[in-house]
Each structure stands twice: as structure tokens, then as C-alpha cells.
Image (cartoon, rainbow, N blue to C red; front, side):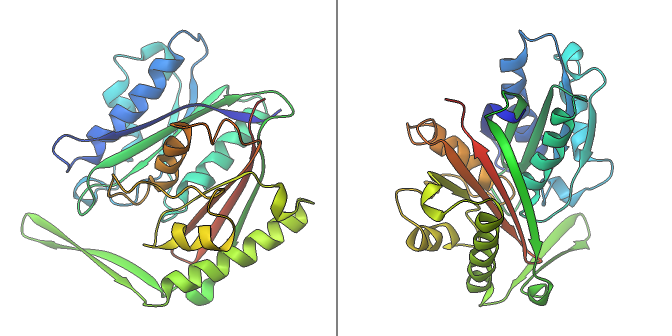
Length: 278
């Protein structure tokens, strides 16, 4: 039994500054599609990296749940919510956690939400997954960490009066190192999964660092790699935004084997194989 994608939503706060607002809106859109179902959401995981005012306590996931609790009391009753901090690679890692609980029969549905506030545009994405059939859904997850590139990307915040300043230091070789690590991880992943490169119908990757998705398309096949339209200036939600872009056309539903690639500082590479329901 695999966990399949039940709903995907992308939302941007009207002011362009509040991640909490856009995250609650994105999750709300997913929950509205679940409303006719009596079984509730077992897990709500937030993987946003740069929240409003860079607050990390209390957990943003619990704040999102609190905003929606009144409208979705039955669905969110007993929901366990928490934040997962794993840089830009948090979405696929969160999916692996929810997938494990669904496969074990502990929960029926789970939601991953991600996005960022300033200096990004407040875009958030939510992805809800639920129980599917044995020949569909998420099948294999993998994570590799390349610690020798851990200093390639650093971010920290500084509090100055009432303002919070965010500083990001990115090595000029960070993009190339990300590509090298992803190529190595994908090669090993396909080998361990007894798959060839040609058997993957669609690749949905992180869209950062800038130029990463386009470079990946040059490596594998432009027709198979989703490169987002660039309408949103986001970071943590990039994979979810890419899923939404793919679902807006025929390419996602017409692809049986989908490879998700999440890359982030560390360098951490998270991979997942997804079998689309036929």
C-alpha cells in the first residue's frame, strides 16, 4: 500500500509578507477537498525555513492548526503537528515520515506545508497525501548528506531594534556542487531500485539554487524535468509549486514513474519514487 497525492495547493499572502497567512490558506484549500471524508488528518508537518519574523517557537505547524481548528474541527481533531527543519530539502523528508505512518495504518491522511516570508514573497504550498492501492503512491525514499560541502550555504538572522535582518552566504560553486551531489545520489538510487534512467517518466526537482532545475533539464531531458514558471519567489515550497505546475497540464497525470528531487544546504539530497495511479 502506498500513499498517494490527494490534494495540492499554492497560496500567496496578499501583502506578500506573511507566511503564516499563506500557509493556512494553502492547507485550508487541501482540507476543503477532504471535508466529505469522515477520517481526519493524522499529521501536519511544516517545513518552512524562513517564517514570519523568523519565529520558530511555538511551532509554526501548531499555529497553522490553530488558525484552521474552528473551521475544520472534525478533520483536525487529534492531529499531531510539528515543524521539521531540514533546509530546502524538508518537503520530501516530511513526505517520507507521513508515508510511513500511512503505510503502517496509524493514520489515513497527512499534510506537508512549506513556504517562506521576507525576503521571499510569502508563497506557501501544501500537499495532502492519503492511502492508495498497493501498486501506486510513494514507494522508495532516500537521503544522502555530503558534509564536505556544508559550508557552501549559510544563513543567519540578526535582531536590530524591531527589525530582523537575514543574511545569506552562498559559495559561487554551490550550484555545481548541488548538481554533482544529485547526479551521484540519483545514480545510486536508480541502481538500488533496479531502475534505469529511461524508466523515469517525470522528474520534479527543487528549483533552487537559481539555475538548478534548468541545469538538471539539460542533464536528463527537458521534456521530463519540471522547471517552474517563476511566478513565485519562494524557497521552501519549490517542490510543491513544481507539482502544482505539473498538475496544471497533462504531464503529471500521464507520467507513471515520477522522481522527486529535493536538494538543500548540507548538501542534503532527498529522493522519492512515486507511482501515479492509473
